Length: 305
Image: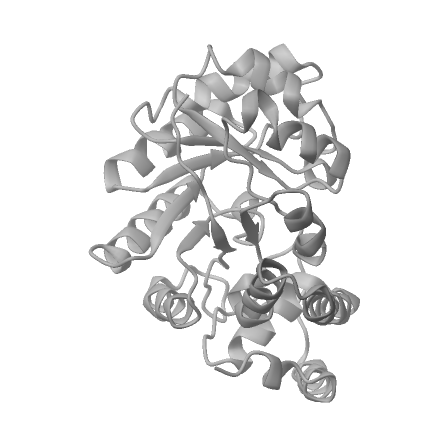
C-alpha cells in the first residue's frame, strides 16, 4: 500500500486537438493556468474526459510529458491515466508516467475482453502497476464505460498484498452503498476519490474528501461552493450549488456531453478543440444556441471569480 490522499477537486482534463483532430500540445499550458486560477490542485490527464481510448500510445506519452513540462515547479499535480485494452501498452504508459515525474497513475480495466472476477481484475492491475513501482496507483472503477461491476471492497482485500503501490480507487460508480464500504475499508486506509460530479454532495455526506470529474474543468467554482457550504453546515446552500451542477450537466448531456463540454471550454477562453470520433461535435449554430442557453441558465455568473 502506498498512501496518497486525494483531497479537493481533481479535474479530469480534456485532450486538446487542432481543428483537424491532431493533438494540440500548445494548449496544455493554458489548461493548467485555467485550473490553477480556479483553485484546482490536481489534473487527471488521458482519462475518459481525455478521450484516452481515441489516442495513440505515442499521443498519450506526448500529452503526459507536456503536462509535466508545463506544471514542473508549480502546485498543480498531475495524475496520469494509463488504462487500455492492451496491458503491455498500459504497463509501458505507467513506466513512462513515472519517468516524466507524474504524481500518481490510474488505470481502468480492459473493457473489450473484460476481467470477470476479482482475482482477474487484480492480475490486470498488478501488471499495470508493476510498471510504475514508485508511484501511487489508483484503480479506476467506471462500470458505465467498462461494462462490468465487481465488488471494490473485495478488490482491496485481494489487491493490497499483490500491488505494493496501490493507493486507492477512483470511484466513478453511483453505488453509494459500495462507496461507503470501500471508503471505510480497513478504517479508511485507502484514498477513494468520488467520480460522479452530479452526486458530489451525497458523497461528501458519506465521507468523501476528494473528487475527480470532468466538469471541474469549467465549473470548479460551483463545486467549491458545494464543498464550502457542506463544511460549514449550510445544507440549503450546498443543495442549491449542487443543483446548479445538475442543471449544467443535463444541459450539456442533451447536446452530446463531450462536444458540448469542449465547446464550453472554448467559451471560457480555453480552446481545447473538437472531440474525436466516435464522440460528436456541435455545429457553429449549435454552439451559439448552447451559449445562449448557458447564459439563460446563469452559468457564466456561477463561474465568475
